Length: 492
Image 1 (tube, helix red, strand yellow):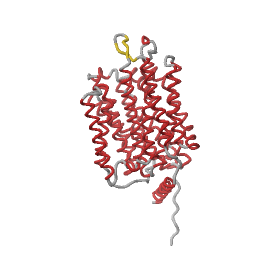
Image 2 (cartoon, helix red, strand yellow):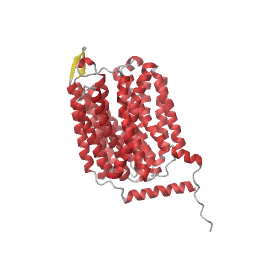
Image 3 (cartoon, one colour):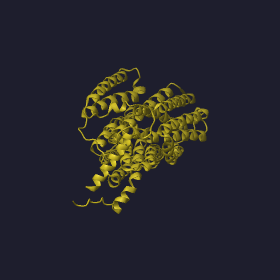
Image 4 (tube, helix red, strand yellow):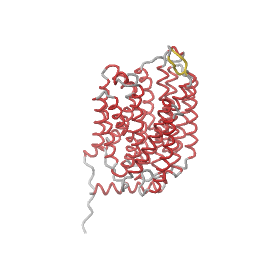
């Protein structure tokens, strides 16, 4: 019998690539958040630049939201089946193609289509977190996942002032050429630095489940996002909500009978998984109000009695502390999760979000208090968003992490869309004329803060009901399978 062949140590080049895995994945997460925010400074001028209506321009935001919600669980499942690095590279590639289309055209139909392609980047976070679970040892995993989760806030805080500066001092197409170059760099970096995970769940892709989920989510989110404009009692909105209920009921029935379902509903039914998804929805609602309201508040005219009349560039600079806070606190959230468990970190995070809204209610006239309140909310968001994927990682098998985290991100997206609709409804019903135009009153903003703070407290209560989150034997066995698969792959 021959001697066993030892597994070769990684080459210097491979070792160098491994050191870049976390930075490259984090760069992709920041890119995703930047992509979502860069269009915001353009919205007031896009009707003139594209010779279209304000209603048509609003679809440049809605299309990204809808595509991201649909594609996140679909691409997560595809990553579990066909390879996470492969699907992650494809998602960044679609985002880059969308940016190039935006850079080349001023036609509103092309821009809406391009923004829908960019929605594929919403899957970057769950795919990256799944790769980190497969590739990193347990002692490094928590801090890396926390950093990956915080990239959402970091990218949003960087994207707004960057886009505002480009729009103010250059042609607006330049902004999309810049995001195209960054997207190409991110996709290339993933292909170069990230290993393809050996953890797979083979089988046939559930096409019927994907189409059913897409139809149900489009009906739901389209009704939520357009309800204020079309009228909540209009036939279109009521029909969309009714259609969503029927389609999702049929989809649920189909998923329970599918041999390889898109979403394992039996897994979702476990309290540790299902309650984590509920907490994600509530947290998404609570945190998003801060992003929506702060920019409007500081840009409101001084004639309102509370507004500061800041420009979009000045507004972006005011939000920079939010991104810096999330970057600095990501290691802290990982340490809390390691010491007390992600369930406690989540509960603490959403409680801090509620405290941040208490600061906003106490004083929303002085700039330093507005920045302080927004920063406290972002502190809680960092803790909560770093804990959610860790809860999912500890509760599901290794071969289902991308799809399970995709569903968790989907629930955050639904929470954010609902928050946007609810905040808009509150502000529309509390306006006063300023310069002949209706402008939200300070009372309306304070009501929005009360609502978001109450939802944050509900998220804290939900987090505390999640069963114990210590890694169980199934998770340890999954880690063993991951290591064994990696050794077999390297040995080959």
